[in-house]
Amino acid sequence: MSADNHIAILISTDGYRVIHCQALDNLVWWHTVGAGEHQHEQREEINPFVLWCYFSGAKVFKTREEAFAYAQTLYRKIGYVEYGICEVSYDKEFPKECPPCCEQPILEATAEDGGRTCINCGEYL
Image (cartoon, rainbow, N blue to C red; front, side, top):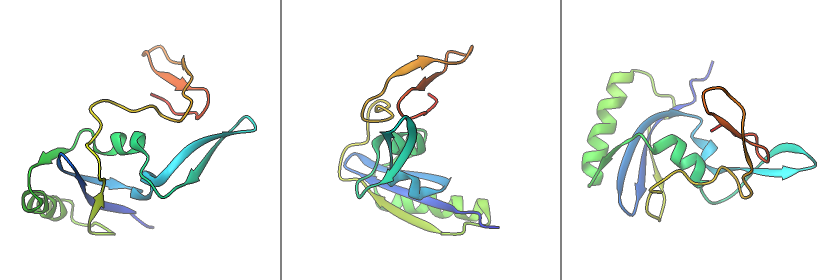
């Protein structure tokens, strides 16, 4: 069975963020709306909402060397990383707050805990 895991170093204009994650290819999938169904499409550019979900809690480093040293520490700690250490380039500043979940978010309360679901894309926030 595949672990589908990575140690990812995000390179953005304001620093380097390092995480251990699965399914890193989700970064280029976008919610779309079609015929009342929740659909996704793969695009060339990174989806800022998914980027935020993956990297918002990450440690931030000023240099590539610091980020790579931390990534190596994570790699050794985890033990098995199927896809190793990889770099993700994002030629923008990391979002200061959570971006919209899709191009036309329509949120409705769906849970007692205050959670909301987007009617258009199905994302639970």
